[in-house]
Image (cartoon, rainbow, N blue to C red; front, side):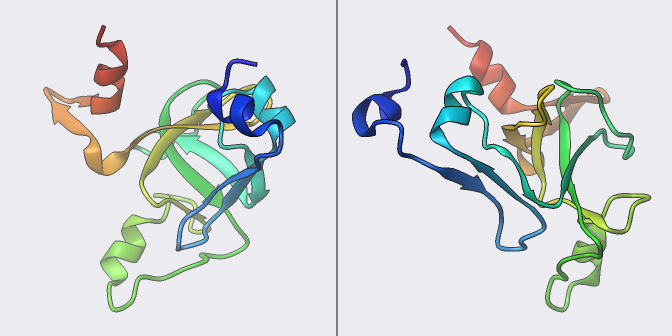
Length: 137
């Protein structure tokens, strides 16, 4: 149906997205992937929030920092409280990020677009190299 992995293996692949910090997890199966190509799935652990640099939650299809909401902060970096604090949302102490950038669609499927560490700030504008690459012929 247009995806090389599905064409090769058939509709048997299941995918997940997470981090070693385990602040959240998304899951997607082959049928959902065919309906939402490029997605890494919907939340299986935590609630997904996409926020701008000030921490304001963004609308569907708007690109921003990916946060997962949990009942409590799910991790702390060893001997690095500043790094732990930088992974927390500015106003929501139980929302955390590992620095990935993306968006959700109307059905709350998550799409990854970049990493915050790769962002360049020029003249007050956030430039994501992957977006520039995607526009190249």
